[in-house]
Amino acid sequence: MADVKLTDLIDVNTLQDIQDGFARLTGMAALTTDERGNAVTQGSNFTDFCMNYTRQSSLGCSRCERCDKEGGEQTMRTGRAAAYFCHAGLVDFAAPIMLNGTFIGSFIGGQVLTEKPDENKFRRIAEEIGVDPNAYIKALRKIKIIDKEQVDAAADFLCTIAKVLSQTAYNTYLANMSNSGLTSLNHSILMKADEAEAALRDGSSRIHALTDAFEKVDHIADETAKEVTATAETVKVIQNIALNTKILGFNASIEASRAKESGKGFGVIAQEVRSLAETSKGAADKIESAVKRIDEYSSGMRKEVVRTKDAVDQCLEELKVFSSLLNELKAMSAE
Image (cartoon, one colour):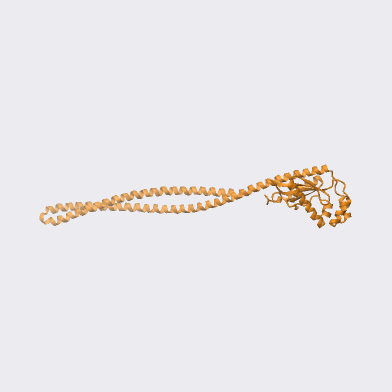
């Protein structure tokens, strides 16, 4: 809070309006200063004595600023409204504007007298600050003389205004802190949403690539099934040839037996043909069994490919929904 300024929390125009209203209501001068005693508003209802004479003198102006600062410091030490005589002999009073115990400025009123002034004293002051004594006394005689009770009432009213300003400043400070925290949180949410969106894009890209791969595998499985079918048909042809060859060899053996001695050589050949037919049939049967297993594996692979592809498509649909939710979240954060 030490770095927070009064004008960071309450608009200068608002301070000016409140100050002007106090001056019109009480008929007294008013000014708002920061924690160092520097004016943050234009003086309201300042007297000619102060504005056109005392503050027109470089020495008088520096003394006025010092008085404003000392009045603010006094209120800062006590935390209460303080009434005091300025260097020129007028009555001023100040009330502190606090931010949860931290002094951030003063609300100053006054430029009045509570009794008839000693004009000789004011002539000496005029000579000290280099102002025409006669003109100074003429301006002095225009200053209002107000009962002390009325001054005290104005000081109390000023203190009430200062308390309201203090509470306003504190509420604004809390709101700013909340907004700052919310902005920081919102920024973090947007960053995480951007990261999630980037990850989502990468994931979607990989899933699309996986889908393409599954389609290729499905195509290969389909082509494999076609080749398996063709191979099975070829195996059946081989099995038929082997069977026919076996029958042919058997018939040849019968004929060789009938030919007796002259048919012995033919009988040996017939036996070999029958043996070759048996071997071909055995090999064809093994190929047929292998082809059936390949067909079963291919069919199972195609089913798994289809099932997995459906699951991937479902994931893509869910990713689209998630992407839509992320976009809504980012839009809400932006608002």
